[in-house]
Length: 543
Image (cartoon, rainbow, N blue to C red; front, top):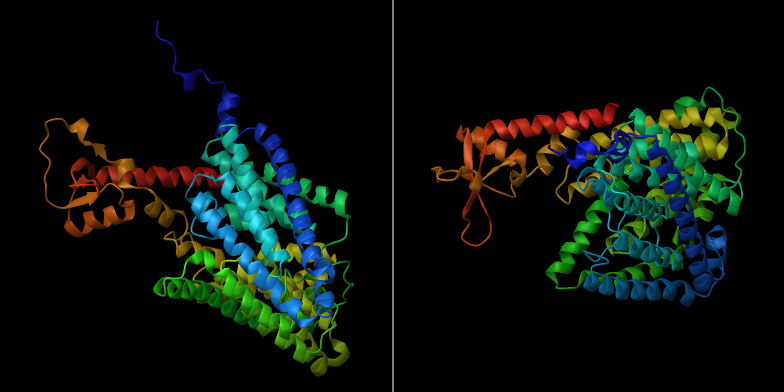
């Protein structure tokens, strides 16, 4: 009597869990929420402890305290931080903890979701968090939310691997980790969940809502229990908008798009330029934080407000504490400082800098509106909030979640509506100009274009080796040694060869040694693999 295969004997509930479809996945969302929430709390406390060591204060008062420090302290703290990060990158490159001599970020999370079945290596993820704590605590001008999202996704990936989840379930838990991290960063559970759907998953499948939502709520609860219920920028004033403020918000959205485009292009180009020059001059990539720290220290002498995550300066802009000239100067210097930070291999994200720049832009715009409209406008603070959401949403490619962050920070329906108007325009214009969000362009530089949707991604990720008929299965067959493809070629290139050469099949060669023929692939099999992959993705994204 034949025994049923192990997969067939597996209990249906276990199979559903491994496929990411069972209620047990909701329980896993709770666990991920706890892990990512406490990890984000630890990241925040670690950055604060490093700031106390270097500057004698934490992020909430960093700009004002830094302004009272002697010039040599402002200059040499980022320099010492650069030396420390360079040493850690060298160690990380030698041990495999920091491959490519860089820390991980949100783009790595998107790569894990799209390419690697939701998997991130635990050791490198934890090492990236250490780099972020020391970089941001030592004055590097970047955000803490990106490292928090990467850390939350790393822990989710570790958990999903430990319990044997399949790719679908792993991707769901990856989104749970991101949601809990954003929620714990801003004390904004609704925005955290929406960020996971909008940026990480890229869809709103019904089966993912419960685990992602519960993880996001738990992340916020953890921060509220330990740090209190106040939003990250404190309690903002209540705004009373007039009818003039909504068309003005649309104008601000256009200005926000311009700033977001400059920021995104500058960030992408600076990273590529510094890396190419380092390679040309034979400078090790791990050593780049040293000159980067010198440049950041020099900028800090001009404006200490550019140091660190920048929450105090952002809060000051929201409270309209800066005059117009100061706002313009801080926009320019913070943009340069953030691009230096990322290009010279410090660890950090772009969420906080984009909010910083948006708040400064909005406050400056609001001051101009007050001159033009007088008492008929809600004031500079109102537009600072709108600008913060518009620039951040355009940079991140997340208009809905940034709108909800603003709503959860202000509890203002008028502000949320105005942000929705501004961020919609800003995001549409930015994506039209750049062809995708900053994260998508970062991933595109690694050879993966996820801006075109699932159909393009499948053509980039399926390899000939996944589809071909191995040579051993064609024993004695005569294989035409004409036009061939290679086993590591993508499905897209292979179909292009078939169309260009008008072929129904081709020999598959290895790239090793004498490039022996190792198999055969037909046009029909390639199309069948493409159709099956699209069907699987469609099922995952709509159920």
